[in-house]
Length: 300
Image 1 (cartoon, rainbow, N blue to C red):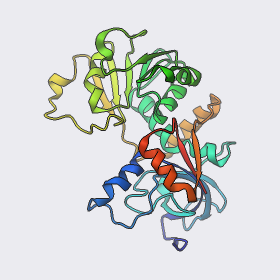
Image 2: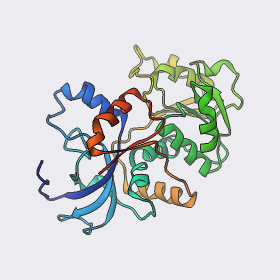
Image 3: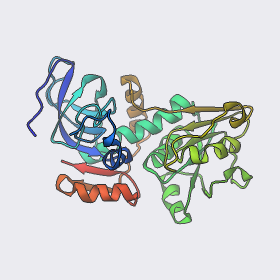
Image 4: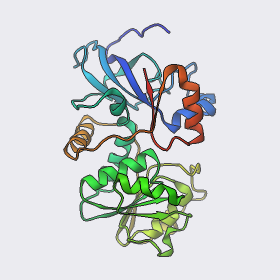
């Protein structure tokens, strides 16, 4: 493909690395067949790199930036490329001492975790948080960010062999999740839950939190995307508050606050595998199977 030509309100980013996401595997497997995806399309919903051409926007050539969401890889060409033409509203200048691969682990993953915890759950140091789907990329980032503000954290996952990893990341306790956490056997009673498994276990999460309790539905790791015949009066228990995080519209202030916390708490971004562009098939096979054990990074 030719290098994209800049236009007003858009900037050209020289991509150095890009995080891979499950949504990109879904795009390849079936979502691209929908009418709202105008193929051919370059996938990729996030990247890190340098401003190559700022056009008429408030950037300078060479600025270190991250970019995420806002239609990347769906409404317009995304980040699986050496150069990406992106709307200025979803490109953010950053000042942090990380290499490109480590920086690429942050944008979508840590923004999703940060928004879920602090915009939706209003997490504070006095809270006990349960992370459901804790071994996922967002789950591990959520543990790091929650511990950074002093909250107690329970990691819930399907396999006991994952406990050591979660404890190393910062979890105070771990618990096997067989889909019924509300049976009262948890080591700590959470007042807040970030639900990353999704609608499949959402009802159980609502029954698990203390009263008052707060649940943020963020992920769909259970591959169940909706709740048939949803009746909010019967579904949501008295004294429990249900919210959800939608990551499509990041703001500059939120991105700045997130990076400030990452720097202040000396959080090391987590990733599991790094692939080059000529290894993209292997990377997507691993992404589709979900066996990476953490974030997959595509290095240009």
